Image (cartoon, rainbow, N blue to C red; front, side, top):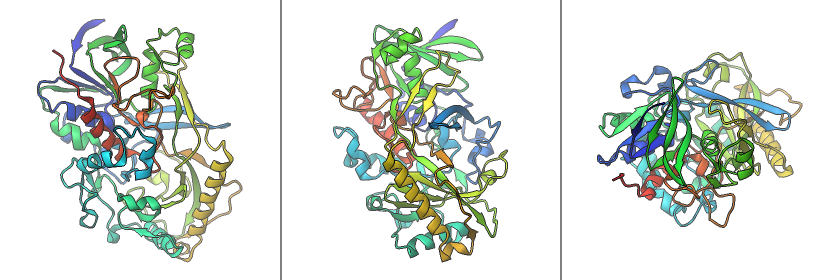
Length: 494
């Protein structure tokens, strides 16, 4: 094993949250910060490949070097291979740019000591520069790293325009600003996105790479963290694998931002998790924490197919507008997924129906202690009668909108046998190592993102959310990382 290195703070994972954490913590020049990313990393803004910048495509297709995959069981008898960003910037570097905030009511389930809506709003505002004059005001920022924009009317895809007309004609209110608190009441509106002039702006591009030249900040790609290392219950570093070689990096502060699948997997491999599961794999228990990997939530999504009469393959983002109606979100994708994702066989054009308040709670367990073997992931979607009713209602609404006069000039809607057959996931997993009160045995973290039962370990990514928000989580993840850093009170080692 190679000689050890040292950093005051190690950040595990260079996704959206990890990029924010490393950039903010390294603002103190007396604190050394090492960011370890399992996928490729870049030394500066100019090094980002064009595929990661082009917001009109999703660079996640077969053979993509920017994603990692894991098998998952969505429901009994329904398995899928899930792709997530495995590159500096994480899934925010390869997704469609959806940047809608959680609603004020979503935070009722969060610890009110530090995470009420009033407490997080300044961090939403501080994280962004909203580029649309019509959306500026008390709810929006003008000096933050993340740019936020909305597709202007003259540039919207014809399907987007027809969808908005269809929804408003059906009685749904048009929301000028989907990121204002009153948008929580529902309605149709243009998606706020982290896309500017066709460029996908990830947290790597907005936060990390502009400051990559700091002498106290080091970003290391292609580095898999095998486990956290402890002396007693105090973290003393991490064991990493680079090009097949294991070595140790010492630190007394580790921030785990590896994502909602790999964060709990790393904790489990490190002896933080249910004691019985650890013992079965020969893992020494550091902290018996039954909530690690258990009870996560996400948004099941069903694809509603249709046929376009005029197949316009424009360089539009994947999603320009959405409708929030009760428990569902209707997503009028602008193009077929084989047009958005290179390497796919031709598939039907679809609207997505996401169930935004699902009762399903999933689990992540280790198959082995090998960090390169994907864990066992089970979503348990649509097991409740209420979820199935809500999803069927959402599919029916989507088909009604597609059949409306506004949409009929653009599309035809074929009959479908089983409205729930085309089940997928929105890739919004949250709560696999959640915050919560000490009285809740399933809570893994306290309200400052500290892992209970050990010293020096924090979790800062969507794993920590008590429950998935009722909107897509990217904007909330950026806010969360900003707020978490402010709460940490991390000091450099003496």
